[in-house]
Image (cartoon, rainbow, N blue to C red):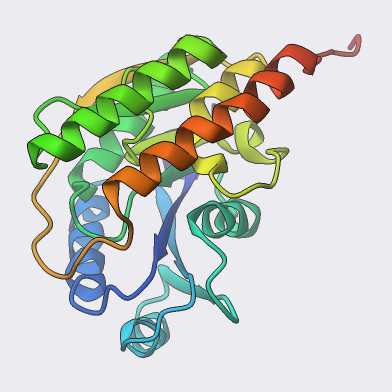
Length: 241
């Protein structure tokens, strides 16, 4: 890849009704990247917030050139938010975290640096010490197990949003709700190389989760049928240079 000084990193963060978290998270990102030589941008994707999240981010993006805001007309889901961010990003490396501050922005340079130094196509974080209740941990373990059993083992923690990839890995993803839960599967299907590193996980400091644990599990399990079909019918090719 290019030298560190020439690399552009784009961070994509979907948010919905996170007015208590967006500004503290932005400050953490600024701190994490202040120690790096890379050029960087953060793309906030507002997925139909009805609180003050959009107003706060609008003010932030006027004052801080690193931060940019994309606002959906109405709620379209986390997969749509990631998709929009991936296609708006200008970086050759794209990183993601969630907007609830459970992911640690200090881990973003770690996953990015592993791509640069070892030339991986995707680096996925796994939550070595999860700060969730036992029910959420159990449901996540079941969901990860079912996905890996049906679609082929990729990473141990598909639900961890701390990750980074070369931009070509995410330019041709299928568009469907729940796509973000299968990012490692699709990246692997396209022939790209993936590795994992442990990352920090924190308790949600403020706000409330936007989904129920059981609904998320059953929807995710239902989606594997379609992804299995895509995996069996997928093709890859390369042309001669």
